[in-house]
Length: 448
Image (cartoon, rainbow, N blue to C red; front, side, top):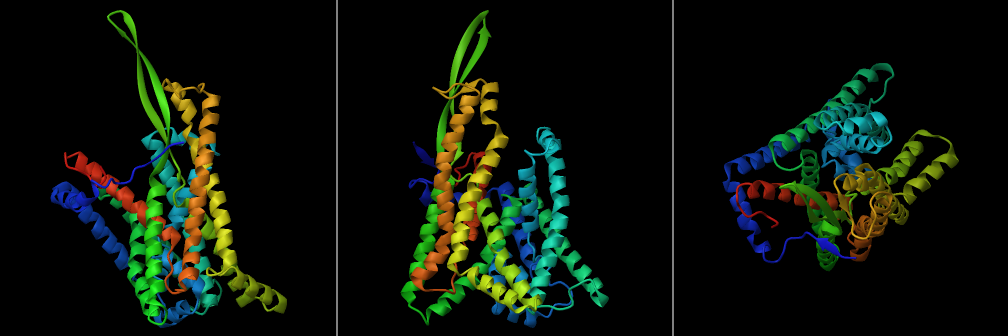
């Protein structure tokens, strides 16, 4: 079984800087890059605009003393710690997109829209926007209740005089999320790269200086070798992510075409391949697993703060301690869920593609495999085998932060697995799009 990794060759890597300079010298490409950067600056500005009635000092003290809130703050790009209008980020939209993607093969109406081309896709996108609003309301209210229980904010609820401030805060959070979704789609349309992914990338990268600074300041009291070893582990993780993200299993395909020329029938043979990615699920399993594993400590904190029954509070405290993001049970559960969700999501996406049916319709076939159902079974077997590699890789990347901090004994500098996957994936995708723009203008690209 041969795999191909579309990683930059050694001969092209030294020309990366020159290719970037050439890309920026093109007016059209430069305008797209500048537009994307300007939109990211607007996003970072919005991330520092707080919702009405927030005591920033009290909120800061709450986040400094709670590990779970600090973990959630990493994924919001620091916006949650400021309780800004962008505190929810674009994650309600991502959740809505995942729900629509999973529901499409199950709902005939959505399947019909998917097959209607551009018009159908626009309608599905509108449904995704509609689903985003209630999801943002629910997520925003849940986070506000949690922060209030921990003492970060007050006057959240719908009784007495608290209803109007609560509604205003929720509307501000939902408006911030929808503004970011609009900004991301504007980047995709007029800028370069996937806009929503770039916004997530911007939020994660904005926290790197603070995280690294805290890690090296803590390293003064610890062994400096531990901090350096952690940096080496981070580089190795990034290299592995690039390799597995780009690795493919190419299934050969032949096409038989018949043409009439001069009253005679000619048969032509064409060759191609089906690229099956080892990690075709991307970062989605990590998002699923993290969302599920973060729920037990959040629920336990809520119960411990609201219930007066002694044994229930003790059980909630035990659950909160056991499922803390720095504990073994949390990371073991994350590994199992990541592996399971990788198979689930890969098979759901694969079932929507109908590869065997499309091959047969186009006159293509896999050598040695009969068209139709045998082709479908063969592709499924190959996909399951290579998905084992992708699933174990994703699970390993998910738990590497825990292992790295235990190995180096540097607890203050956490390497976010999902963050690294997002950063590497978005950078690779953006490089490909810039390369495509350059190839259209007869310039050498970043990758080839």
